[in-house]
Length: 455
Image (cartoon, rainbow, N blue to C red; front, side, top):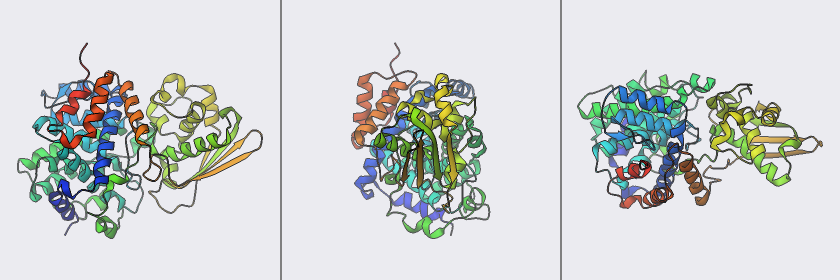
Protein backbone atom coordinates (compact mmCIF):
# COMPACT_ATOMS: atom_id res chain seq x y z
CA UNK A 1 0.00 0.00 0.00
CA UNK A 2 1.36 3.40 -0.97
CA UNK A 3 2.26 5.63 1.98
CA UNK A 4 -0.12 8.29 0.68
CA UNK A 5 -2.86 6.20 2.31
CA UNK A 6 -1.30 6.77 5.73
CA UNK A 7 -1.24 10.50 5.14
CA UNK A 8 -4.83 10.54 3.88
CA UNK A 9 -6.00 8.84 7.06
CA UNK A 10 -3.87 11.11 9.25
CA UNK A 11 -5.51 14.15 7.69
CA UNK A 12 -9.01 12.70 7.75
CA UNK A 13 -8.86 11.49 11.36
CA UNK A 14 -7.18 14.46 13.04
CA UNK A 15 -9.46 17.00 14.71
CA UNK A 16 -8.59 20.26 16.43
CA UNK A 17 -8.72 18.78 19.98
CA UNK A 18 -6.11 16.19 18.92
CA UNK A 19 -3.49 18.86 18.28
CA UNK A 20 -1.15 19.87 21.14
CA UNK A 21 -0.95 23.45 22.35
CA UNK A 22 2.59 23.84 21.01
CA UNK A 23 1.41 23.16 17.47
CA UNK A 24 -1.45 25.64 17.83
CA UNK A 25 0.94 28.30 19.10
CA UNK A 26 3.32 27.63 16.21
CA UNK A 27 0.44 27.85 13.73
CA UNK A 28 -0.48 31.31 15.00
CA UNK A 29 3.14 32.43 14.93
CA UNK A 30 3.85 31.33 11.39
CA UNK A 31 0.49 32.33 9.94
CA UNK A 32 1.14 35.89 11.14
CA UNK A 33 4.76 35.74 9.99
CA UNK A 34 3.66 34.60 6.52
CA UNK A 35 1.08 37.36 6.27
CA UNK A 36 3.72 39.97 7.07
CA UNK A 37 6.22 38.55 4.62
CA UNK A 38 3.51 38.37 1.97
CA UNK A 39 2.61 42.01 2.50
CA UNK A 40 6.23 43.12 2.21
CA UNK A 41 6.65 40.84 -0.80
CA UNK A 42 3.92 42.82 -2.53
CA UNK A 43 6.68 45.18 -3.57
CA UNK A 44 8.87 42.43 -4.97
CA UNK A 45 10.07 41.90 -8.54
CA UNK A 46 7.34 41.33 -11.14
CA UNK A 47 4.47 41.41 -8.64
CA UNK A 48 2.54 44.12 -10.48
CA UNK A 49 3.08 42.32 -13.78
CA UNK A 50 1.87 39.03 -12.28
CA UNK A 51 -1.29 40.64 -10.93
CA UNK A 52 -1.98 42.32 -14.26
CA UNK A 53 -1.39 39.11 -16.21
CA UNK A 54 -3.52 36.90 -13.99
CA UNK A 55 -6.38 39.40 -14.15
CA UNK A 56 -6.27 39.08 -17.95
CA UNK A 57 -6.44 35.28 -17.89
CA UNK A 58 -9.96 35.22 -16.50
CA UNK A 59 -12.40 37.32 -14.55
CA UNK A 60 -13.50 36.58 -11.03
CA UNK A 61 -13.60 37.99 -7.54
CA UNK A 62 -13.10 34.82 -5.50
CA UNK A 63 -10.16 36.13 -3.48
CA UNK A 64 -7.92 39.15 -3.16
CA UNK A 65 -4.20 39.79 -3.51
CA UNK A 66 -2.81 40.70 -0.10
CA UNK A 67 -1.91 44.35 0.27
CA UNK A 68 -3.06 45.22 -3.24
CA UNK A 69 -6.73 44.24 -2.99
CA UNK A 70 -7.03 43.06 -6.61
CA UNK A 71 -9.87 40.51 -6.82
CA UNK A 72 -9.01 37.38 -8.82
CA UNK A 73 -10.22 33.84 -9.39
CA UNK A 74 -9.02 31.62 -6.53
CA UNK A 75 -6.23 29.85 -8.49
CA UNK A 76 -4.80 33.19 -9.62
CA UNK A 77 -4.99 34.69 -6.13
CA UNK A 78 -3.22 31.61 -4.77
CA UNK A 79 -0.43 32.06 -7.30
CA UNK A 80 0.06 35.76 -6.55
CA UNK A 81 -0.10 35.51 -2.76
CA UNK A 82 2.22 32.51 -2.53
CA UNK A 83 4.68 34.30 -4.79
CA UNK A 84 4.53 37.39 -2.59
CA UNK A 85 5.28 35.30 0.50
CA UNK A 86 8.37 33.70 -1.04
CA UNK A 87 9.83 36.32 -3.35
CA UNK A 88 11.88 38.05 -0.64
CA UNK A 89 13.34 34.83 0.86
CA UNK A 90 11.87 35.92 4.21
CA UNK A 91 9.38 33.08 4.79
CA UNK A 92 9.63 30.39 7.45
CA UNK A 93 11.20 27.04 6.61
CA UNK A 94 11.56 23.51 7.95
CA UNK A 95 15.32 23.09 7.86
CA UNK A 96 15.42 19.29 7.99
CA UNK A 97 12.89 19.03 5.19
CA UNK A 98 14.21 22.01 3.19
CA UNK A 99 10.59 23.00 2.59
CA UNK A 100 8.68 26.31 2.86
CA UNK A 101 5.37 24.51 3.37
CA UNK A 102 3.48 27.42 4.98
CA UNK A 103 4.07 29.52 1.88
CA UNK A 104 2.35 27.25 -0.61
CA UNK A 105 -0.42 26.13 1.72
CA UNK A 106 -1.42 29.60 2.90
CA UNK A 107 -1.45 30.94 -0.64
CA UNK A 108 -3.80 28.15 -1.69
CA UNK A 109 -5.87 27.72 1.46
CA UNK A 110 -6.62 31.41 1.99
CA UNK A 111 -7.77 31.78 -1.62
CA UNK A 112 -10.19 28.87 -1.22
CA UNK A 113 -11.30 30.12 2.20
CA UNK A 114 -12.17 33.54 0.76
CA UNK A 115 -13.98 31.99 -2.18
CA UNK A 116 -15.97 29.42 -0.22
CA UNK A 117 -16.60 31.48 2.93
CA UNK A 118 -17.36 30.27 6.42
CA UNK A 119 -13.84 29.02 7.18
CA UNK A 120 -13.13 29.61 10.86
CA UNK A 121 -9.84 30.40 12.52
CA UNK A 122 -9.79 26.91 14.02
CA UNK A 123 -10.33 25.46 10.56
CA UNK A 124 -7.39 27.42 9.17
CA UNK A 125 -5.03 26.50 11.99
CA UNK A 126 -5.83 22.79 11.75
CA UNK A 127 -5.45 22.89 7.97
CA UNK A 128 -2.07 24.61 8.29
CA UNK A 129 -0.83 22.22 10.96
CA UNK A 130 -1.77 19.19 8.87
CA UNK A 131 -0.40 20.69 5.67
CA UNK A 132 3.00 21.25 7.25
CA UNK A 133 2.82 17.79 8.78
CA UNK A 134 2.26 15.99 5.49
CA UNK A 135 4.83 17.93 3.46
CA UNK A 136 7.55 17.80 6.09
CA UNK A 137 7.09 14.17 7.12
CA UNK A 138 7.49 13.32 3.44
CA UNK A 139 10.47 15.60 2.89
CA UNK A 140 12.45 14.64 6.01
CA UNK A 141 12.34 11.02 4.84
CA UNK A 142 14.37 11.91 1.73
CA UNK A 143 17.96 10.68 2.06
CA UNK A 144 19.39 12.32 -1.06
CA UNK A 145 20.08 15.93 -2.00
CA UNK A 146 17.82 18.41 -3.74
CA UNK A 147 16.90 17.31 -7.25
CA UNK A 148 13.81 19.39 -7.96
CA UNK A 149 12.76 22.53 -6.04
CA UNK A 150 11.40 20.82 -2.94
CA UNK A 151 9.70 23.91 -1.44
CA UNK A 152 7.44 23.84 -4.50
CA UNK A 153 7.01 20.10 -4.97
CA UNK A 154 6.44 19.08 -1.36
CA UNK A 155 4.70 22.40 -0.82
CA UNK A 156 2.03 21.36 -3.31
CA UNK A 157 1.14 18.43 -1.07
CA UNK A 158 0.95 20.79 1.91
CA UNK A 159 -1.51 23.00 0.05
CA UNK A 160 -3.69 20.08 -1.07
CA UNK A 161 -3.76 18.84 2.52
CA UNK A 162 -4.86 22.21 3.84
CA UNK A 163 -7.49 22.81 1.16
CA UNK A 164 -8.81 19.26 1.40
CA UNK A 165 -9.16 19.58 5.16
CA UNK A 166 -10.96 22.93 4.83
CA UNK A 167 -13.37 21.42 2.32
CA UNK A 168 -13.99 18.29 4.40
CA UNK A 169 -12.88 15.85 1.71
CA UNK A 170 -13.48 12.17 2.32
CA UNK A 171 -10.54 9.80 1.94
CA UNK A 172 -11.16 9.00 -1.71
CA UNK A 173 -11.54 12.63 -2.76
CA UNK A 174 -8.43 13.70 -0.85
CA UNK A 175 -6.43 10.86 -2.39
CA UNK A 176 -7.44 11.99 -5.87
CA UNK A 177 -6.67 15.62 -5.03
CA UNK A 178 -3.13 14.59 -4.10
CA UNK A 179 -2.73 12.64 -7.33
CA UNK A 180 -4.12 15.41 -9.54
CA UNK A 181 -1.74 17.87 -7.88
CA UNK A 182 1.07 15.40 -8.40
CA UNK A 183 0.35 15.45 -12.12
CA UNK A 184 0.88 19.23 -12.09
CA UNK A 185 3.80 19.32 -9.63
CA UNK A 186 6.67 21.53 -10.76
CA UNK A 187 9.78 23.42 -9.80
CA UNK A 188 13.42 23.05 -10.82
CA UNK A 189 16.62 24.04 -9.06
CA UNK A 190 17.85 25.87 -12.17
CA UNK A 191 15.98 28.99 -11.10
CA UNK A 192 17.75 28.81 -7.74
CA UNK A 193 21.13 28.28 -9.35
CA UNK A 194 20.72 31.33 -11.58
CA UNK A 195 19.02 33.51 -8.97
CA UNK A 196 15.95 33.93 -11.15
CA UNK A 197 12.67 35.46 -9.99
CA UNK A 198 11.05 32.32 -11.36
CA UNK A 199 12.14 30.61 -8.14
CA UNK A 200 9.39 32.26 -6.11
CA UNK A 201 6.93 31.91 -8.95
CA UNK A 202 7.39 28.13 -8.78
CA UNK A 203 5.96 28.29 -5.25
CA UNK A 204 3.03 30.23 -6.68
CA UNK A 205 2.52 27.73 -9.49
CA UNK A 206 2.16 24.91 -6.98
CA UNK A 207 -0.30 26.89 -4.84
CA UNK A 208 -2.39 27.56 -7.93
CA UNK A 209 -2.17 23.92 -9.00
CA UNK A 210 -3.29 22.74 -5.57
CA UNK A 211 -6.46 24.83 -5.82
CA UNK A 212 -7.13 23.44 -9.29
CA UNK A 213 -6.43 19.88 -8.15
CA UNK A 214 -8.83 20.13 -5.22
CA UNK A 215 -11.55 21.63 -7.41
CA UNK A 216 -11.08 18.82 -9.92
CA UNK A 217 -11.20 16.14 -7.23
CA UNK A 218 -14.32 17.71 -5.71
CA UNK A 219 -15.94 17.47 -9.16
CA UNK A 220 -15.21 13.73 -9.22
CA UNK A 221 -12.09 13.58 -11.38
CA UNK A 222 -9.63 10.84 -10.48
CA UNK A 223 -5.90 10.24 -10.66
CA UNK A 224 -3.36 7.46 -10.03
CA UNK A 225 -3.13 5.92 -6.56
CA UNK A 226 0.56 5.29 -5.89
CA UNK A 227 1.89 8.82 -6.11
CA UNK A 228 4.58 8.51 -3.44
CA UNK A 229 6.02 5.02 -3.83
CA UNK A 230 4.94 3.92 -7.29
CA UNK A 231 7.57 3.31 -10.00
CA UNK A 232 7.11 6.92 -11.13
CA UNK A 233 6.02 8.27 -7.75
CA UNK A 234 7.41 11.24 -5.85
CA UNK A 235 10.26 9.38 -4.16
CA UNK A 236 11.54 7.95 -7.43
CA UNK A 237 10.90 10.84 -9.79
CA UNK A 238 11.23 14.08 -7.83
CA UNK A 239 13.68 12.58 -5.31
CA UNK A 240 16.19 9.74 -5.57
CA UNK A 241 15.85 7.76 -2.32
CA UNK A 242 14.08 7.79 1.03
CA UNK A 243 13.76 5.99 4.37
CA UNK A 244 10.27 4.53 4.78
CA UNK A 245 10.67 4.10 8.52
CA UNK A 246 11.41 7.82 8.92
CA UNK A 247 8.50 8.61 6.60
CA UNK A 248 5.82 7.12 8.86
CA UNK A 249 7.43 6.50 12.25
CA UNK A 250 6.47 9.80 13.90
CA UNK A 251 3.23 10.55 12.06
CA UNK A 252 0.69 11.70 14.63
CA UNK A 253 3.34 12.01 17.33
CA UNK A 254 5.72 14.68 16.04
CA UNK A 255 3.99 17.84 14.84
CA UNK A 256 6.29 19.26 12.22
CA UNK A 257 4.93 22.80 12.51
CA UNK A 258 6.69 23.02 15.89
CA UNK A 259 9.98 22.45 14.05
CA UNK A 260 9.69 25.43 11.69
CA UNK A 261 12.38 28.08 11.73
CA UNK A 262 11.81 31.80 11.53
CA UNK A 263 13.86 33.73 9.03
CA UNK A 264 15.27 36.75 10.87
CA UNK A 265 16.84 37.98 7.62
CA UNK A 266 15.45 38.25 4.06
CA UNK A 267 17.95 35.90 2.44
CA UNK A 268 18.24 32.21 1.72
CA UNK A 269 18.12 30.25 4.98
CA UNK A 270 21.36 28.58 3.98
CA UNK A 271 23.10 31.96 4.41
CA UNK A 272 21.88 32.40 7.97
CA UNK A 273 24.36 30.14 9.75
CA UNK A 274 27.26 32.11 8.30
CA UNK A 275 25.60 35.45 9.05
CA UNK A 276 24.66 34.35 12.57
CA UNK A 277 28.19 33.18 13.33
CA UNK A 278 29.82 36.34 12.03
CA UNK A 279 27.43 38.65 13.88
CA UNK A 280 27.90 36.69 17.11
CA UNK A 281 31.67 37.07 16.80
CA UNK A 282 31.32 40.76 15.98
CA UNK A 283 29.20 41.33 19.10
CA UNK A 284 31.52 39.27 21.30
CA UNK A 285 34.82 40.69 20.08
CA UNK A 286 33.79 44.22 19.12
CA UNK A 287 35.53 44.41 15.74
CA UNK A 288 34.20 46.44 12.82
CA UNK A 289 33.77 45.29 9.25
CA UNK A 290 36.68 47.53 8.23
CA UNK A 291 39.03 45.61 10.54
CA UNK A 292 38.40 42.26 8.83
CA UNK A 293 41.09 40.81 6.59
CA UNK A 294 39.11 37.76 5.51
CA UNK A 295 36.50 35.24 6.64
CA UNK A 296 36.58 31.48 6.25
CA UNK A 297 33.43 29.37 6.56
CA UNK A 298 33.32 25.56 6.56
CA UNK A 299 29.79 24.48 5.69
CA UNK A 300 27.80 21.35 4.79
CA UNK A 301 27.59 20.54 1.06
CA UNK A 302 23.99 21.79 0.79
CA UNK A 303 24.91 25.28 1.98
CA UNK A 304 27.75 25.51 -0.51
CA UNK A 305 25.45 24.26 -3.27
CA UNK A 306 22.67 26.72 -2.44
CA UNK A 307 24.49 29.92 -1.48
CA UNK A 308 28.22 29.48 -2.05
CA UNK A 309 27.93 31.21 -5.39
CA UNK A 310 30.51 33.76 -6.59
CA UNK A 311 30.09 37.47 -5.95
CA UNK A 312 29.41 39.31 -9.19
CA UNK A 313 29.84 42.97 -10.08
CA UNK A 314 26.24 43.12 -11.22
CA UNK A 315 23.84 40.97 -9.21
CA UNK A 316 20.08 40.76 -9.44
CA UNK A 317 18.12 40.99 -6.22
CA UNK A 318 17.27 37.30 -6.38
CA UNK A 319 20.89 36.30 -6.97
CA UNK A 320 22.18 38.49 -4.14
CA UNK A 321 19.71 37.02 -1.64
CA UNK A 322 21.28 33.64 -2.33
CA UNK A 323 24.91 34.81 -2.25
CA UNK A 324 26.27 34.14 1.23
CA UNK A 325 29.34 36.32 0.72
CA UNK A 326 27.29 39.39 -0.16
CA UNK A 327 24.68 38.81 2.53
CA UNK A 328 27.31 38.27 5.23
CA UNK A 329 29.32 41.34 4.26
CA UNK A 330 26.21 43.49 4.23
CA UNK A 331 25.21 42.18 7.67
CA UNK A 332 28.63 42.95 9.14
CA UNK A 333 28.56 46.49 7.77
CA UNK A 334 24.95 47.19 8.80
CA UNK A 335 24.50 44.99 11.90
CA UNK A 336 21.91 42.87 10.15
CA UNK A 337 19.95 42.56 6.94
CA UNK A 338 16.80 44.48 6.09
CA UNK A 339 14.58 44.44 3.04
CA UNK A 340 16.62 47.40 1.76
CA UNK A 341 19.75 45.22 1.53
CA UNK A 342 19.03 44.67 -2.16
CA UNK A 343 18.48 48.25 -3.21
CA UNK A 344 20.77 49.30 -6.09
CA UNK A 345 22.88 51.45 -3.78
CA UNK A 346 23.42 48.53 -1.39
CA UNK A 347 24.28 46.08 -4.16
CA UNK A 348 26.98 48.40 -5.49
CA UNK A 349 28.40 49.60 -2.17
CA UNK A 350 32.21 49.33 -2.64
CA UNK A 351 33.04 48.46 0.97
CA UNK A 352 30.41 45.73 1.09
CA UNK A 353 31.54 44.25 -2.20
CA UNK A 354 35.21 44.40 -1.21
CA UNK A 355 34.70 42.36 1.97
CA UNK A 356 32.30 39.99 0.20
CA UNK A 357 35.13 38.98 -2.15
CA UNK A 358 37.30 38.14 0.86
CA UNK A 359 34.85 35.61 2.29
CA UNK A 360 35.76 32.04 1.45
CA UNK A 361 33.19 29.26 1.74
CA UNK A 362 34.45 25.69 1.77
CA UNK A 363 32.67 22.34 1.97
CA UNK A 364 33.14 20.35 5.18
CA UNK A 365 32.92 16.57 5.56
CA UNK A 366 29.24 16.44 6.59
CA UNK A 367 27.73 13.32 4.96
CA UNK A 368 24.10 14.54 5.20
CA UNK A 369 23.04 15.95 1.80
CA UNK A 370 20.21 17.95 3.41
CA UNK A 371 22.09 19.43 6.40
CA UNK A 372 22.26 23.17 7.08
CA UNK A 373 24.38 22.80 10.24
CA UNK A 374 26.93 22.84 11.70
CA UNK A 375 28.74 25.87 10.33
CA UNK A 376 32.29 26.76 11.41
CA UNK A 377 33.38 30.40 11.06
CA UNK A 378 36.81 31.95 11.40
CA UNK A 379 37.21 35.72 11.16
CA UNK A 380 40.79 36.88 10.58
CA UNK A 381 41.41 40.53 11.40
CA UNK A 382 43.99 42.82 9.80
CA UNK A 383 45.73 42.87 13.18
CA UNK A 384 46.38 39.15 12.82
CA UNK A 385 43.84 38.12 15.45
CA UNK A 386 41.73 35.04 14.71
CA UNK A 387 38.20 34.62 16.10
CA UNK A 388 36.33 31.35 15.59
CA UNK A 389 32.89 29.98 16.35
CA UNK A 390 30.89 26.86 15.51
CA UNK A 391 27.16 27.29 14.95
CA UNK A 392 24.90 24.31 15.60
CA UNK A 393 21.63 26.12 16.30
CA UNK A 394 21.10 28.97 13.87
CA UNK A 395 19.18 32.02 15.06
CA UNK A 396 15.50 31.54 14.26
CA UNK A 397 15.51 27.77 14.67
CA UNK A 398 13.42 26.09 17.39
CA UNK A 399 16.61 25.54 19.41
CA UNK A 400 17.57 29.23 19.13
CA UNK A 401 14.26 30.96 18.44
CA UNK A 402 13.35 34.56 17.85
CA UNK A 403 11.59 36.00 20.87
CA UNK A 404 7.91 36.81 20.57
CA UNK A 405 8.83 40.50 20.63
CA UNK A 406 11.33 40.01 17.78
CA UNK A 407 8.70 38.07 15.84
CA UNK A 408 6.26 40.97 16.20
CA UNK A 409 8.96 43.50 15.29
CA UNK A 410 9.61 41.55 12.10
CA UNK A 411 5.89 41.49 11.31
CA UNK A 412 5.43 45.22 11.91
CA UNK A 413 8.51 45.98 9.85
CA UNK A 414 7.17 43.94 6.96
CA UNK A 415 3.82 45.70 7.14
CA UNK A 416 5.63 49.05 6.99
CA UNK A 417 7.67 47.86 3.99
CA UNK A 418 4.58 46.93 1.97
CA UNK A 419 4.03 49.03 -1.17
CA UNK A 420 0.71 50.12 0.34
CA UNK A 421 1.48 50.21 4.06
CA UNK A 422 -1.30 49.34 6.49
CA UNK A 423 -2.23 51.90 9.12
CA UNK A 424 -1.04 51.17 12.65
CA UNK A 425 -4.52 50.28 13.90
CA UNK A 426 -4.96 47.63 11.20
CA UNK A 427 -1.52 46.17 11.92
CA UNK A 428 -2.33 45.80 15.60
CA UNK A 429 -5.80 44.46 14.81
CA UNK A 430 -4.28 41.79 12.58
CA UNK A 431 -1.84 40.79 15.33
CA UNK A 432 -4.67 40.57 17.86
CA UNK A 433 -6.96 38.66 15.50
CA UNK A 434 -4.33 36.01 14.78
CA UNK A 435 -3.49 35.80 18.48
CA UNK A 436 -7.14 34.90 19.11
CA UNK A 437 -7.59 32.96 15.89
CA UNK A 438 -9.63 30.18 17.47
CA UNK A 439 -12.45 32.69 18.05
CA UNK A 440 -12.60 33.98 14.44
CA UNK A 441 -15.72 32.88 12.56
CA UNK A 442 -14.50 33.72 9.03
CA UNK A 443 -10.87 34.10 8.02
CA UNK A 444 -11.83 36.44 5.20
CA UNK A 445 -11.63 39.06 7.93
CA UNK A 446 -7.85 38.55 7.93
CA UNK A 447 -7.68 39.60 4.29
CA UNK A 448 -9.93 42.58 5.00
CA UNK A 449 -7.32 43.80 7.47
CA UNK A 450 -4.51 43.32 4.92
CA UNK A 451 -6.14 45.57 2.32
CA UNK A 452 -5.43 49.25 3.12
CA UNK A 453 -8.34 51.61 2.62
CA UNK A 454 -8.19 53.66 -0.55
CA UNK A 455 -7.27 57.21 0.24
